[in-house]
Every structure is written in structure tokens, then in C-alpha cells.
Length: 337
Image (cartoon, rainbow, N blue to C red; front, side):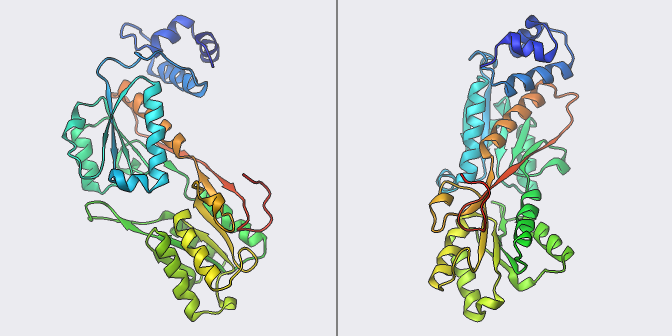
């Protein structure tokens, strides 16, 4: 674990300056740029700051777009929230949690808010009106001049599609779903579908019937593929599938198995999220690993910068990269988990 001397050396500051910045000394006169540099270095070096480094009474509110029951069934958002909580505790904040349908009036008294999930414009406005020190995790809100942390949804899709093409697979399909915000005012579009369409059209390989749209559930994945196979033979069916969720992939695998279609011999499959269940399916799923805990932690760091530099703070979008984990559901794995 790093110490103050190591941080000071890397930051090019005195140990005293580093200590006073990390302990929020109000009498210290240094630039905001220097403060941000020290905080980033301390975070990167996993420096454990004193428990009292957040001022007394500084509660951080976590707003989740799901109910608590829904969140427990969704590893993606649960993991983000755990990442937020771990980082918040490291920085000495106390935590108040709010789930779907909870009254949000108390968040106005929090030092800041981390909003996890997908919200309509009306819901965003409501949160910001209650507490303007808010960072959104999992939704791009930069167009609203609001700081956010998101995962890269473009590069991994293109990498998967190039992988399929490099292996001679051109009948590529996508299994995905669109949803709606909690207030039912706005549709949530999967930007990975747009990336898929644009990429496949650029290669003159796009086929609308190879786009399978449903709900994000095992049942939907199963139903979409089962219905498609009732009217199509294997030669007309995709020989490669990108699936936007491991959850849907479970149903897809079952449908293919019931129709005696072999994976990956007949159909290559790469999924998204790399959930805990991905390595235990039959066959084990190749999947794109999303660093959800890191998303949560970066959200807390961004919120700290917003709180400390609110007057001159410029909103930013932090994009967290992904990693493609190869397992048995796709050809020639070059790296295994």
C-alpha cells in the first residue's frame, strides 16, 4: 500500500501538501488541478486514507433505478452498486441507499448522489433538482451537461464482429432487447444494435431477419431462437451470434440444444457482461467482461471532484473499457479465464 511520501514524489508536491489535500484542509491554498492530481494518484496507488477524511455528516446517496429485489437478480447493476459502496467507504462517506419507488426527497441533504441505471429526462431533472452534485453511472448524460461513467459499448461489438469474420463466419446475427425507463416515458435503445447494423452494412452483410429483438431474459432468448428455427433451416440461420446479455444467452443455448444445433460447430456464440454464470453454461460462454465495480469506483471519484471543484467543474464522461473472455462457445480461444 502506498504512503504519503510515495504519493508526494509522484505528484511532485511536498508530503505536507499531499496530507493536507487528502484531509480536506480548508486553509490550504493550492490549485484545483493540483488537488485533482493528488486525489487521482492516491486512488491509483490504492492509498487508504483515514476514516474521518470525509467531513462529519457527509452522507453519500446511492439512487438505484431498480427495486432491491430486481437488483438482486441483475448482477450488472448489483456489482456497480457494490463498487460504489466500497469506494465510498474507503473515502469515509456514510451511505444511504434509495431504490425504485422510494421517496427521493432526503437526497437533498446528501453531500452528493450516485445514480445507477437508466433514467428518463424527467427523472434526471427530478434528481438534479433535489441534489445538483450527482454523477450518473451506466447512462450517458453528458449531453445534459452532467458527469457520467459508462462502459464502452462500441469497441467490444466491433471486436466480436471482426473475430467472427476472421474465422470465416459471415452470417452473423444479434440477440438483444430494448427496454423502457421506470416512468415509461422513454424507450431505452441498445446502442450495440446500432453499432452492429452500421458495421454489418459497411461490410454489405447486414440481414434484417438476423436481428432478434426481445426482452432481457432467458425466456425471451429461448423464445426468439425457437421461433426462428421453426421457419428456418440451419443453412439459412446465422452461423455466429452476438448476444447482448448472458441472461438472454442462457435461453438461446437451450433453444439451440433442443434443436440439435451444436455450439460452436454450427453456431459460434459470444455474449456480453461475463456474469458469474457464463463459465458454468454448457458450453461455457465466451463473453465480454464489463468492469462494473470499476465503474462504481470511478463514479465516486468523479463525484468527489465535482463536490470539491463545483464552481469551475466541467462535466465529463468516463468510459470504462472491456475485455473479451474466450471460452468454449466460440472458435479457437486464445485466452481463457
